[in-house]
Image (cartoon, rainbow, N blue to C red; front, side, top):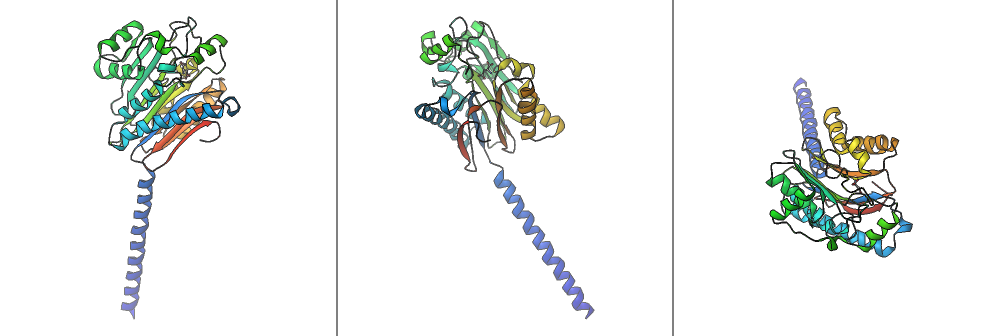
Length: 333
Ligand code: ASP
């Protein structure tokens, strides 16, 4: 009788143990499934973007270009490429389009010229590169990358940066390339909807994060004005230990609040989630200062946010779990 009881108890323990092992393995699988192997998030600027102000044609053009940029980055990642290459591919796609305020579609300064800013950061080694106030470089993000990889500096500005890019074989254009009627008109009207910067953050299958941002700055800005986009820590930041961030909005506030680094530092030093850190910085800190703008960000686990305190932000994401979407207005996420 005693023996039977002992055997029953032992059997019971065995069943419970097997059950526990089974449950744990299921949960782990779920976690693995939720953690994408790769991910990319992009933005094409935040601002007063309202459905009533965009024709369905224009909306379609933006959606197509955002999808194209996402696809360019995702293809790199799917094939085992690096997050830096994915960020570069997505951003150059948007720089080559007249729709966004970067590269081809850059806005005009008060003097009717184009002065572009860009930066890129490698989260695996916190290496970074940037250019500011460049006038002839077709793809400023490539120049930023060139500064990071093939110079001993982090940032080059003005003519020196243009010369550096030319000497390093990057494509150079004259001012007529950067002329677009739409930007010229908004410059003359000093349009309220003055943002439109582009940016991307990515996580690759090697576990590395990267971020990049490119812009024409703000319409009617003073000659020589530099915004947050080329400032590492303000408009762009990436560190595998926290997250990758690209910002868009009223640059002066983003510089003063060191926005991209603030989010990364909050995560790193106080252990809050990416979502909590971004909400605090964008929806509370900046909002309290009436500072308009937003960010996209991604952490090492593939969690991402697209947080903005404006009416809308051109944005999109895609990851290896099959998630993907392009959005414009302030409806979701
Ligand atoms: N942040 C950019 C700047 O101030 C503008 C923008 O994001 O549209 O130069």
